Image (cartoon, rainbow, N blue to C red; front, side, top):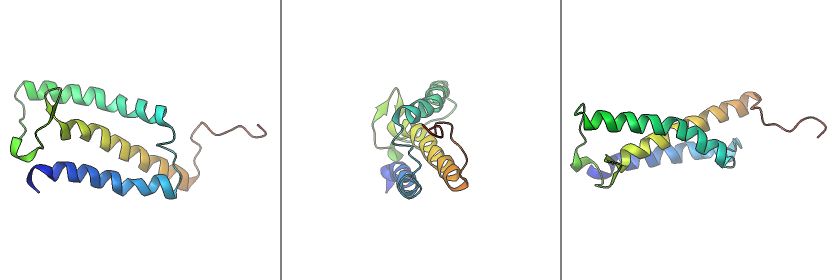
Length: 112
């Protein structure tokens, strides 16, 4: 797979957690604003940290192992990692809440 390995892994993570949304009705994608804010709270600082560390020479990315598209000076896959993994984590958390019937905090009030 070479340059597509990272992208395929990220796609697998999304596909593997998608049934949680459908089967357990986690409503992560239905709450787009909440989901976007949650992912941004993770992605922004970690992309920034990654960018600074890369520019400082702490690590490199092998161009032969990426698709060759850069975003903010980082490989696209690296930036997507900080979106996909928090999204999968959020789906998993909401799935556990759904199964355990833990309140989320945005349930309609009784009698409303």
